[in-house]
Length: 212
Ligand code: NYM
Image 1 (cartoon, protein in one colour):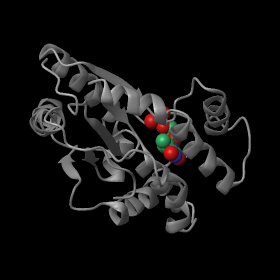
Image 2 (spheres, protein in one colour):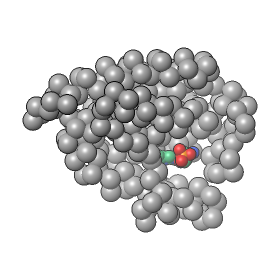
Image 3 (cartoon, rainbow, N blue to C red):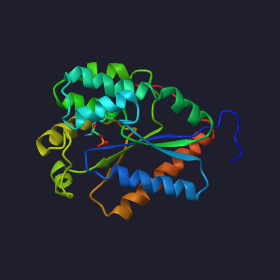
Image 4 (tube, helix red, strand yellow):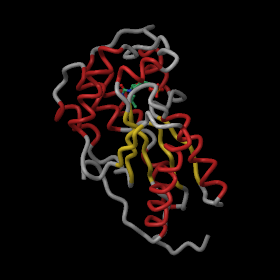
């Protein structure tokens, strides 16, 4: 790759309900981009490897109780602690495929009844994604997919609320993909938009910050 100084990697985020196929599709995107010789890394939030991430993990496993606001801020802190590494990677030309980001943070916490503007505030100043891919699936269909794991939030009634929150957050810049389509069709649609985004960032599209 012939990098101009302002050439950079793309920040690409996958969002959607639990069991919408994000993890599988991010793996496929990674191999697709690697096959085209792009520098690319797979990231996910929560990042359970940090100290904050371990608190989150224990909360999700129902091994600890936390106030709804407190856990919201921990999810946000977990993104903040990765922010500078994220920026360095992007500026050095690496594309990041990120499984969940601030939109999960706001969608899940506001589904519990927290004020949406309050939920968005701690995300301000994090890097804005160049592309948000929303894997769209009705909560009932997601629930049919081999069942949920045992983690907190993985219940149909709550996922219905999360779906509603995502609808509120959703804006015209998001790319929505019908996640009920066969895996290969979803994969094809993702490849097209992702390649377009990577190319635009390579040409030097400036980085921006949430919420923009
Ligand atoms: N989740 C994830 C949140 O509630 N807030 C956040 O900011 C993020 C990133 O954590 N049910 C929720 C959504 C998921 C759970 O995610 C764990 P995963 O992708 O299953 O590891």
